[in-house]
Length: 394
Image (cartoon, rainbow, N blue to C red):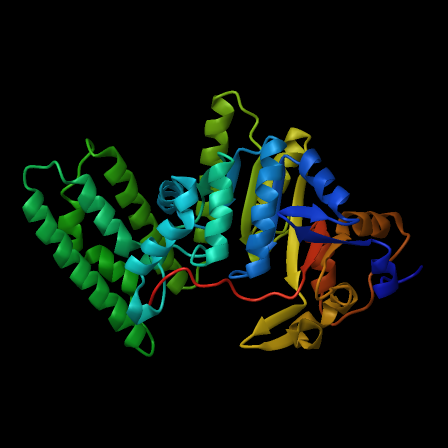
């Protein structure tokens, strides 16, 4: 039986370009077919990629035409709502995100408040989602530094309370101690129990305590913050599963809410590659597995798509991942990557050939290639990539 090698992979490979916000080339038909036939599309990315954001912006109008009204992203539920607010009006999205990211840039941590939306290209695909009236689903915990903007939003929700001036002072005290703890944790060699400490702080409890069940939005927000801090606290103690469970639960909440309206929701999702395969990843059955299982249950199709870089430009130097030990088991895949074109490899077809006995996997010291083929339906190799252009002022 023949063994998978680069020549065999070539028979499953097509190429495309993105020109004038459109897919062009021999693989464009395959991409359109994938979009048309799928109920779920899960993109597994490397974060901070210029070309991935460009790909996403190009896909969004196409998935909208195919009936996709939902876009699941790797941010918290409240942060997703914030992003939707910042992308209205749509033409101001890049500027609105610039102002937001600049205002809430956490200097001591060198970080912004909503992850994976700090670049100009990120704001552009957010704008594309808004222009196509696609709803964002935030599935993840609220990012650790999102509290820097969330206390401002909570204060704004308290503006009509009779003791607003006192609440404003409580907010300032909470901000002060939160920043102090973050900076202490950053400076500490071993770190501190940051999130449990913040939950216990009297000033934080007092500020949160100014809201009750009549303040529906504020209470939902505070609950999301507390859950997120608890997940981070468990993560510091070695638990990864709590975060995955929360993301899966949030997906199902959104999904079931759409089902109750009579909609059969189609969802585009964009997450880190660890979360995207249909098989176990990082020790967990992640969101990529959830959408795969849902499609099987529904008798529909889920397309799990791996995004990989071959060439990356950093500080004017072009690096080739073919030379990386990390990718040694994927050389038969990566060798088809090109500098100026996108590579589209049909892993679903390769998987079918393996199962039917037409081809077999090569012997290897690890199972990276096997996991790629089992976990994903398509492999897209990006052209020469770089990091997104920062959309904030330091």
